[in-house]
Length: 135
Length: 84
Image 1 (cartoon, each protein chain N blue to C red):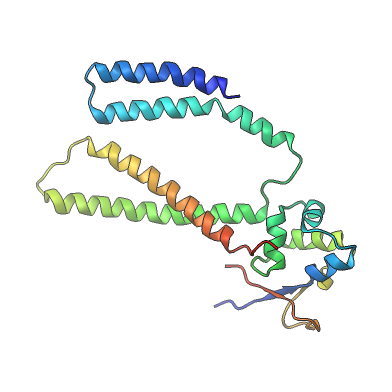
Image 2: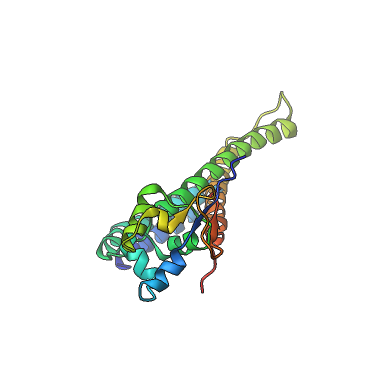
C-alpha cells in the first residue's frame, strides 16, 4: 500500500531537488513540491476506498452528512469573507493606482484552500464534540 | 425561533431489550454508534426513516421511542433533542 506513494515520492523529491538547484524561485518551487506530494498521495486513494468497502460497518450516516454539510457551508462563508478581506487589504496597501505582483495570487489561493479546509474540519470537530459523551 | 424538543426512551428500551449495547442498536438501525449516542443524549434529532428503523429494532412504534412535547409526556425524565 505504501510502495506506490514511495515510488512517486522518491523520484519526485529528486525532481524537486533538481529544480531547486537550477535556481527556480521559491513560489514555483513550492507549487511544484505541493503537486508532487498531492500526486504521490493520490496513489493511496484506491487502497483507502478498498479498505472502506471491505468493512461492513457503517462509517458515515445522516448525522455525519449533516455535519459535513454544515462544515462546508461554514467554510464557504469564511472563504468569501477571506477573498473580500484579501481584496480590501490589497487595495488598502497599494492604493487604487497601485499594482500587485502575480506572485501574490498563488499565495492567496493557497491561503484560501488552507483556510477552507481548516474551517471545515474545525466546524466538524466542534459539531462532533456536541454529540454527547461516551460512557 | 423554533423551540421543538423531541424526547426519547432509547436508553430505557435498550435495557429492556436484554441490555442491548449502543453498537448493537447502531448496527440494527444502520448508523454509527456515535449517532445513537447523540440521539440518546438528546443532541441530535433523527430523520423520520431513522426513527422508524430504531423503533423497528425494538419491535415497537415510533411514538414509544420518541415523544413530542405536546403529546403525553413519559413519567421518567427523558432526554431532550434539539437539532441546530
